[in-house]
Image (cartoon, rainbow, N blue to C red; front, side, top):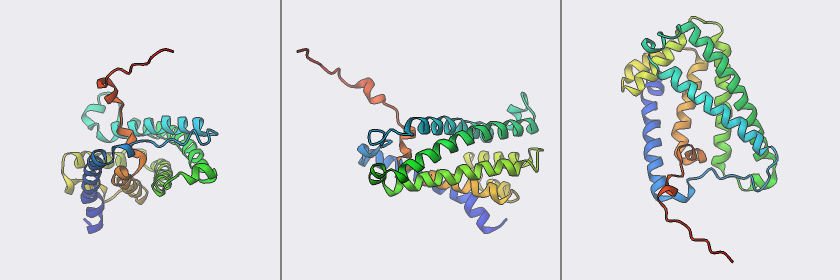
Length: 225
């Protein structure tokens, strides 16, 4: 097993997760008013609604597919579907929702870069995370093309082994599973881990937000004229 393979896929995942958890905790505790999506719709709503809807619908289904596909053990999904059929289903659904997400993201990124008012209120982290999302989506769609050369599900099993080994703290087994997969898959995983690392420093934190504080607040008294 190579040193870099062990570093990137056996050790780096835990560094990314640790930084994400601690960074989110510190940011929520020290800078709670920065914990927001930072919508720019009031500055210019053109392409905002359709682009945002396409992006969010696409990314939700893509993330759900990754979660189920990578973390569900073979013994469970083999009751319903074979490995080969699961790969085909993942390619079709992932390709469709990946393209939906990509179209929405390109619309949002073009708007943020070309509209003077939106661009003036955008931080460097906004541009960085949108660019990183674009790279990750393109890599994800390229993995679908690469998967057409091995429809037996072998690579999908290795990727699932990697993910399940990470969550069960078997770093050596995780790194070993990634040893033989293609470079496009390794890049896709690496960029995904980098997004987790950058998560607490960007607007992505709004993903884990919920207005639960409103449930415990006191009623507002509104007086009539």
